[in-house]
Length: 561
Image 1 (cartoon, one colour):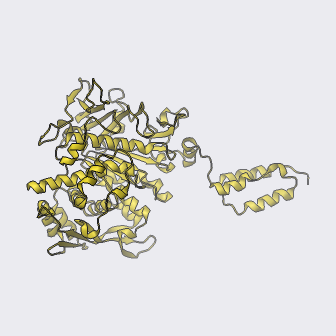
Image 2 (cartoon, rainbow, N blue to C red):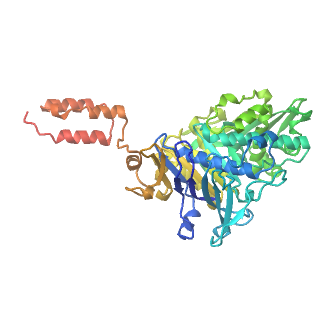
Image 3 (cartoon, one colour):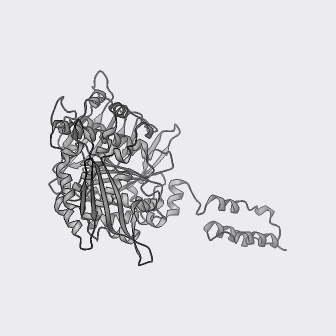
């Protein structure tokens, strides 16, 4: 999918009614845009803390969550009693994007349709329900309406479901709680969807909804499926930058809890059997199933997974996703109802965290084979032994790589927070190269990144860099760099210039060191001895443009004594 425009017509936090963001021109207005849309060019939302850039990710997550809830049918009774199609946050909006309806077709421009989703606040003239229309390529016909809200007691989703992305992925390095709210609601719905299938003894294959949030636990599955299914060429960055050589071993713990006198995993029997066929060994007790997986040099373990999960990388990942979802089996219905009604901040303390014995599934002994930098030594390490930056690198790269054949919207909130400067400067190029090696179709996905890093911005086209700020009323504004009064080409621009022009920061050194330079009083310099004394004090400072400018000014002072 590719985003076109977003208009917010009701207040949402710092985003006020009237907010507009045009992601790209329409094809019919600018045909040359077709070339850009076929290449890897993520959007980068830049701005100071509190400027509202993350709010746009939250808005998009909330919009797609709401449309999914309108269209889907496998929902528990307590949710149906709470959910109202005419109430959303934000409660009025317009969203336009391109998407290919037939996923089996080559995902190319001539197979796209232009989708427009609108929602107004409920009035006497409008029911407040979201509306969806589409136009086939070349988008010259009159928009065709499609029903968004599923009929009561329907067994299949509303027709609008076909016009939504396969996946909406959320990720936040800083645990953005507001961003995660619609995704967490979705996890609870996923569990109840599975529970209903269990009670009806109906076959369960995959979650009905497309929202997926990647937290630490889920990221273990992301890394694992990539190490099993991706080629060495695609995984080159993991080897070169992190020294990751592959998996050593891991253990799956499955607690065989029951619901209404049935084992919760009964409806997932076929997948559990597939895991057993892949395992090096497994041990089954009355209340627990333990499976061990050891990776041999000949690749037999990988071959077993390829054979038993013929759907490939995402089929295996989704199997882990569903097992993680079942960990919510112990959450009470009244807590779920409380979560479903949340329309703002939601504190973690309201949802109890299950102990290991209360979970359905978790990893143990998750070991990675790692080569130390500038050394031939190899060590088997637990994933939790990796640094925050290393784990973040694995998360973000792995998320993008596993979506090769999926239309997806990726909402990445400051994914580079824990990166060292080198990784920040390489992040976009590594992502692009790995996606190209995996033969990804860039038309299938849209990647939105919020960032403070000038390195990230320097690798993004100016048309794709959006500066967020606050106006005099405190409302969030979003302006493309190309539309700024002092517009400039961000792509390939030095980080110093980006810091100055986008963040109003014109120093190349820290404030403490700079205060020593700013504290020099040139009016008190009367003798050459005064100059020499200042130069002696400056020796404790390292090299910088600021220091060089002070020294040059000192050297220009003419004194008789």
